[in-house]
Each structure stands twice: as structure tokens, then as C-alpha cells.
Image (cartoon, rainbow, N blue to C red; front, top):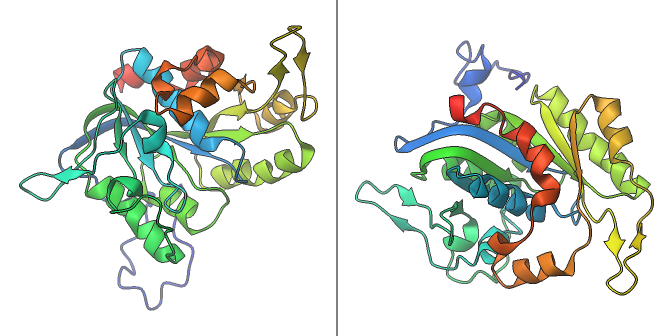
Length: 278
């Protein structure tokens, strides 16, 4: 995580922000989160939220206490995929209590706080970034082994806030086979590097499609480039997710916890390394 580099002449914190810890948002007193992983991409529409959901399901299947912080404030989709629709509540100390999914995954998303989830969120960057910090500071997450943060696309205000304000242990980058997407995703990988956040894995979504009639595998969007991308940046763990109508059906039906997540097993090994000992 990089240190502050702006002109501090008029800053109220001048002289007191010499370490990266000074930029971190204060954790909620009732939160004990062992590991925080950002799921990011430089481009929208590549399946970042889907990968977040499947990683959370895979970690929960391993018996871990899992949470998902939906930092994609203007496009929150995590609750619907898990079938969570009830509003978040608060305790006697006004800490927000995150609703839990069928298998116990704790979830916090703007859609769990507003009256109508279909209303657009027309807020400027600083307000969006402030909400993300509140999801960390004002939510009583309880005991969590691993938290996955569903990031908004790009490298703007909100991703920067997540990198600077949350104690990230690493990031998973999501891409698709097209060359133009890989080029944009490079920006996300390099942003993580600039912020001193290790990229633990790269997931290539929509990598292939298996014909249900003949069984032949088709590379609809071109040949895979995930291995080349990973090698270029020294990333060890990769995964390819096929286009699977069954997974799409589970997500649309609010039952993502029934989806097959075996394609992410190897990547999860890397992401969850040492989590029980931290």
C-alpha cells in the first residue's frame, strides 16, 4: 500500500501520516477479520462479481467463516446471487449487522440498505468511497476467516479507497480471453503493484463453452491468454471458468451456493494459504 504523496502543506494530518497504517479505516470494534482479498478488474462486464461469489462459496465449502463486502456501490449484485433480500439491521450500539446467506456467508451491500434496490445510485466518487469505508468501519462483521471485496471496475476513486483504507492481503484479477480486455486488465494488475498489494491469482472468465450435444469445447472469445498474463507479472495461481448455463441459472435464482466451484480449487489454495494460522 503506497504512502500519501500529495502536497501536505494544508493537510490537517501533516506530519502524522508517515506510515501506510495512517490511511487505513478503523475496523469495527466487533469485527475480527483474518484475511481480506480484493476481486478486481480494469474493465466492467468480465464477471468480477461472479468470481467473487464463487470464491466465497468455495471458501465456505471448506468450512471457513466467509464475508463479502460489495464495494461495487453503483452496480451491487452480490445479495441477489446469494438470495439475500432482507434489509440490514443494527444493534443497540448502531453497528450495522450484515445479513447471512443460506450457508452463513455474511454480506454487506448498498442494496441491503436502500428502500428500492432498483433505484440508481447517482453519487459522486467521494461519496461512493465514503460508503465503502463505512462498510468496513460501521459493520459488525464478527469472526471472519476471509473477506472477499467485490471491487468496481477501473482504477478510480473507489478502487483506490479500497486499496488505501482496507487491510488487503492480496487481490484476484478477473479477465476474459479477448486481447483488448487483457490489455485493460493489465492496468488493474499494475495498480495493485503500485499499491504494494500482491496479486494472488488471475481468473479468466468465459474461457470456453462445452457443447451439450457433441461435447466439443469451443473457445468462443479466442485462445486463452491467462497463462501468458500470469507469467508476465509473476503470478502463480490461475483459473479458467467456462461459460456454464447451470452456473448462470443458480446465480439468477439466488442460489449461487449450489454452483460447482471446482474450477477455482487451485486458486483458492493460494488465496486461502495460511488463513487458519493468521
